[in-house]
Amino acid sequence: MDMRPIGVFDSGLGGLTAVRSLRQILPEEDLIYFGDTARVPYGGRARETILKYARQDVRFLRSFDLKAIIIACGTVSTTSLETLQKENDLPIVGVVEPTCRRALAVTKNRKVGMIATQASVRSGAYEETLLRLDPKVEMISRPCPLFVPLVENGRIHRGDVVIETVAREYLEPMKEAGVDTLILGCTHYPLLTEIIADIMGPEVELVSAGEESAFELKRLLKIRGLRTDEDRKGGAEFYVSDRPEDFECTASVFLGEDLHRAARRIDIDKY
Image 1 (tube, rainbow, N blue to C red):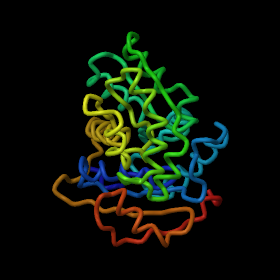
Image 2 (image 1 turned 90 degrees about the vertical axis):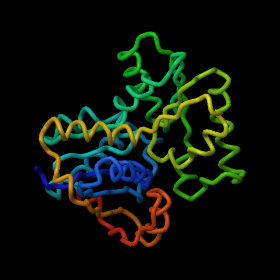
Image 3 (image 1 turned 180 degrees about the vertical axis):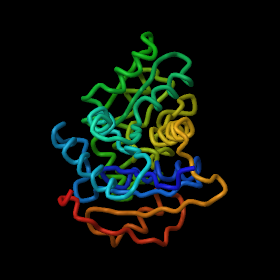
Image 4 (image 1 turned 120 degrees about the vertical axis):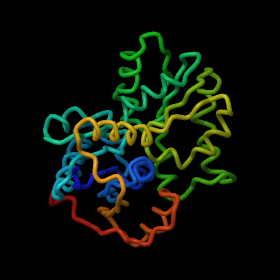
């Protein structure tokens, strides 16, 4: 039994969708969440900059006595995961491989789409992983650079002409290409599930990166004997690098529940 908390980080608040999945899949575990809201989004930045930010995020989380970390950021997972795993002596789980395994399990025609940030698409990590797992799969990827800022600003609802117009522009070419499975390669994107599903249609299966990483972490904790007492109810602490004043309202949307804990602001440049 290991009572230490799990660390989770993302470039902004999108990783709270992974927290939501963790609280459903591992409700007994304590969580420490950091959202780098001062520097969101990471997706359009250089690989070296992303790694620098990710190292700072990990150093902050490791100021707590953690037993594992989830990188709830597709951009960091696709560009920096291997480096971070080599530099740290605790389990660090990314979103790529668990998500690819799930996509291959549900696709019927072996045509898999993937939407993510520019950095994630540019890295080729999802395509490389899919082809390693199934050389016959066909993958179509597309960057969606406007999704993260729109989600962070609450533009997530059906009937919002801005997000619906942007989503159609990004997604219609994928639908025309005949994909039957679509990877949501950024943890912000599950907030757009209804809009994405409306455009892609009921025949296309959506696979959430944050949810699959939570299942992967559960498996890993069990193998390594790091689970806590399964009869307890875990808690969560939240930290951000910019103004925490609007955190409760926005976080409540991401978590799907009313949140009555304010986040605390930290100076990420100290790490």
